[in-house]
Length: 327
Image: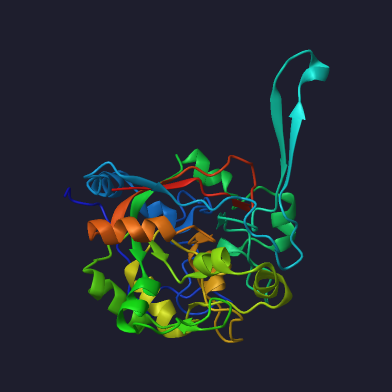
């Protein structure tokens, strides 16, 4: 392992205060030469971090984590399902086909950019970008990720579902469409169970079983779970989780649910606001972690080399992740 040029972070309570924001805000921390930062914690992915991540490649086995873009049969929150048209090229004088695709980036595997979810009581995104300015400016868009070379990191799977089922044989796990909240204590227990250590700059990926539930559910149950009501399993929304995440200094987080944290969130703590808005930490959602879980168990390794090449759209609010784990 090469020596990593790490960022030095103050402890949570010693971070400089930011007017109008709670203690723990990172606005300005990554700014350079008077320019407002638009990458947030992806700045942690420097050359040394990437070289160390590459040491995870030992077998050559690899798994893509994108769910099919048409799998979410009943998108919620007023979002449209994918529209895919195959266009013949005969009218242009050729024998061939083109794709025409219309999507809402939130309806399958995705990254949330730093202009997707705002601080709800303020309408502010990461580093103080207002929703009014975000509508007319590309600032905080996901094109910044593409222009820095995509996301290349060490990924860590916290296979909570496999851990839960191991310790509760014969029992049904908590429902994926319930607001079951996974506490920090269980995340740490899973990491200990797996023998997995986290490093600064890792991408933390949590498997709850949401995709497995969706794959196995009938049509009416899917409609109930993803469109008619909005209860979702996920990580606990509280300050213990906030402080734990801050102490780990992940470059990004991801999972297999529609919201990463348990939903709905309480009024006093929303992890979307802490991650996306306060720290600039991208959130991956609806990732297909089923095959990844199998491979990790087979290899007895829950860390891997991870690459993500988002689509390059200037000012994008989100993107399919196009993400691959390599062992």
